[in-house]
Amino acid sequence: MPTSDPEGIAPVIREVMRLRPRTVLDVGIGMGKWGLLFREYLDAWHHHRCTQDEFRIQIDGVEIYEPYVQQWHHAVYDTVHIGDIRNLAPELGHYDLVYLGDVIEHMPKEDGRKLLADLKFKVCIVSTPAVKTQMIRGKVNPYLDHKCMWTAADFGRSVKVLHRNRVLIVELTK
Image (cartoon, rainbow, N blue to C red; front, side, top):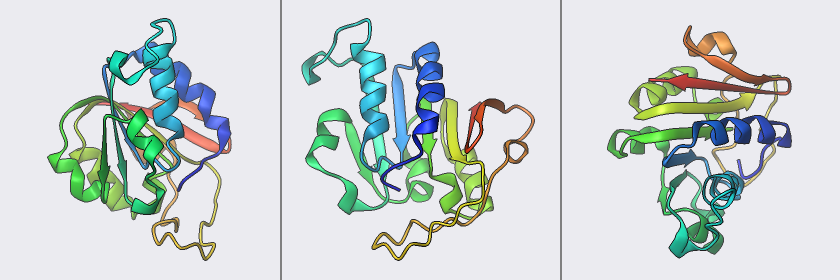
């Protein structure tokens, strides 16, 4: 999905600033908002690293729907992987932070569980709708349909809930 509910921006950014990851994987980059926010608050905020040659944080992205990827993504992300994260995850390296923003509800729940097991991370932040939504709108992107809904309990006992209203935001550690 190229955009997301803005309700989750502040809780995610506050937690990312607290965590201070050196490597980030943004899954489902869409318009690139999260990559830009991660770049702003990890490289620019307090450090004044505002140009590509000054960036020190590795921020990679994954997008399943190639038409979303534009020139500006390559200015924000160090690497943009095109493809299904379920297929790419075993080949990707370890990240301090993996961000799954409006991704996990677009696959069957068993695929989501396997994905979380396959990804290599210190911390994973997952943002997903907390209320039933239907994302079948006749759009050209065939990956937009919602396949399931997640609750905090679906993530297991070690989950930390960062936010729960229209958007459920949880933090997982390995």
